[in-house]
Amino acid sequence: MVILDKAPSGAIIDTLAGVLDFYNMRPNPVSERSIPICRTWPRYRPEAYPDTSKIMQPFFAYIGKMSPEISPGVEAAYQLMAGGTGLTFRDYMTRCYLSKGNI
Image (cartoon, rainbow, N blue to C red; front, top):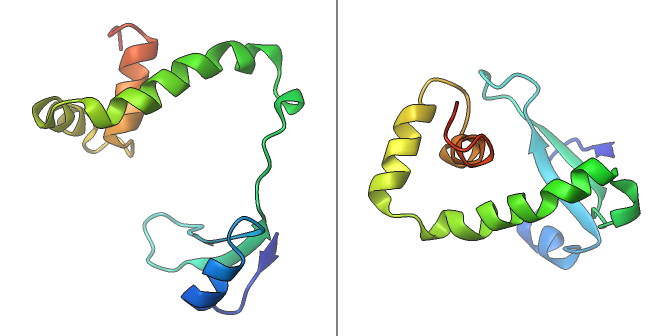
């Protein structure tokens, strides 16, 4: 990981996509200040995950696949429940799914 002085242009980011990952880190979520960061592109290494994580991966994959399919009304309800918690509607939806609605 490298801290950059300023974010590179879009053309540079596009050229290095899949090799380097550029993003802005916000150390303080309340502040608008962000720090441009560059790191090597993340690689999927299944051997790096413990067995407990591997067991849960299909559940998270299912949630990720189904979240775009929910109706706007259900999404609005999740957004309302997640309001003021610091969570996104998908975070809250994941919690509800994994806890079988007992949150």
